[in-house]
Image 1: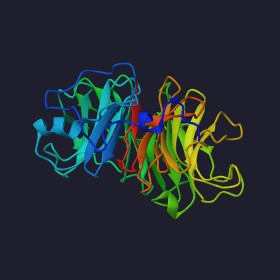
Image 2: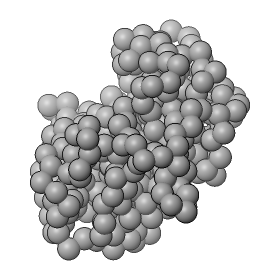
Image 3: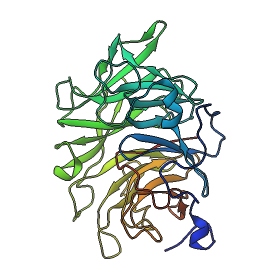
Image 4: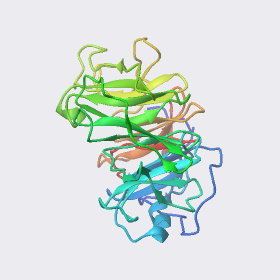
Length: 331
């Protein structure tokens, strides 16, 4: 297997072997350094940020959030593409439902509840926020389907009402949204079952006004798949990244694929045998959760970094079993 850093395997991995490790005191952090960042969860209730750089030390953002309240759950920490704005589902604030959606700037100097027209927002999966920090898309119950996508926009006095954008969807479950780089469309899982392994799941997109919903990648796009789902569609410089288990090289491993427009998908993640949850950076690199990295005998979901062509750069969180509920990425 090719290792893009050109060094010994040990040198291709970060030094920390814990979920958080390293820095991250309550004093907060500055904005993006321009190297790129990933965000992830660990242990089902803590969230971290790490530079997209082999050897980087994870920042324990849950520790920073501790100054806002003594909650026990932080999930789905997600940045805007430019890294200026963050969303998180947390129980640290006074939310009537226990755990609700909250907003923070990249400095993490403040943390405030997102209230859609004055109402708490309870999300069902990873949300997304635009570069201006004034538009949020999330999945929740309450629409015509089991799960739908809703948009809320910031006004002069707060966040406005939630607007349904997957009303015409032919799928009962619409979740895991992510904005495209140009901020005009939302990529998301569109499924016949609550979990991809439970039934047919395709990848769809829709405009922010709810128009133009379409299938981006179908689970039947290529024949003879090992499983009936594609999942986690995410934008990249070259097309849509997603995970699937179609035939390649005599097998059908679950790994990362790339589809440009309506072309035949290509296995951009062929060097990542058993990989899920892609997230593309705007410089062409992308992150994945890799279950088969060097020395990973336990099948942990280690966060790994790949070059634009799919060459492995290295593992960022060696030995850490990152929560497989979606990761975030930003400049």
